[in-house]
Length: 392
Image 1: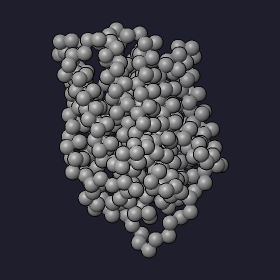
Image 2: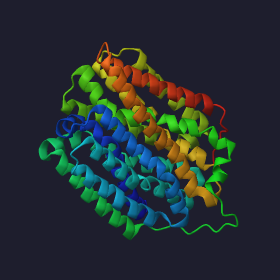
Image 3: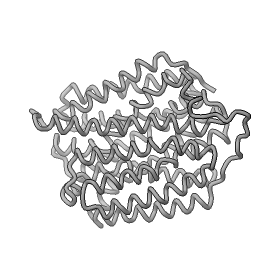
Image 4: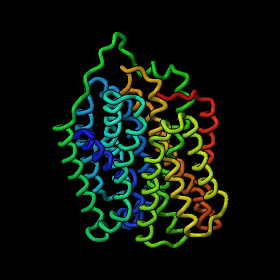
């Protein structure tokens, strides 16, 4: 792997860490700054929405400015700056502001990698290479689980987040120094985002892109901690272990999905098959009143594994983009993926707040959340059934 892609991959490790670390901080943040699970769901949603909103300017910048300056500047200002704000937070509002800034900072790093992949490597291997970047970068998901729990116990959450701010700043400076921008595409047509939005084929992919990651992003990013604490009385250490298991399942799923389009000769049915299993896992948690601890752990891992179809859906969309709109194409697809997860995170926070007041059992609010997630995935699958299959 090129040195610049390796460093962008490490930057994506940071992105994965930031989107998921709230799950193991719910107790300490509620105690120290008065942030409830609903507050943290909102803050997590703000991260995803800021990340998604930045995809439009990031797409333009990748095509016009290049990945080096785009990724380095935003990660330094947003990622490192937002982590510093988080480390100094004294209220839930400060947490939300920090998560917005961090979302802005993380917005370009994966798309910068995908832009380079799309411009430098053959289209046929895009899904595989995209899965490698995503899978390796998902180490951040693991780091935000048990290792973060142990670090917070040893040093305190503020010291841990200050450390992440320093790491983010150093990484941003490294990106500025080593990333190599691909040669500019010279095209007679200027091309705009509207050219992509006019493609009917993409509109059959967008809904599933918006819904398929939401269960894993929401569960791993926030709900897994409160769920196991309230339903099974789990300790912080056990929550760290469970989040580690789910994070490992997400990585395994990413690497598994990566080459399947070339092995099976289809992208559409790989995506449908995997998301049917994630739908089953969501509805089992939502409708079956799971009482066995390890069955619940297995279902969370199943969601993590089968919701990892992101690189294959990204490759499916990539097959329709003209060369001069690759930057805007990958970021438009990412806008739907992260924007959908962010909106669903904020909605589930409201659902939880409404359901917890009248809950008959500790599991009842979470059963509502996972039924909601399952319904979204089902809707996305129904629309996606009409999509045109395309491989390179």
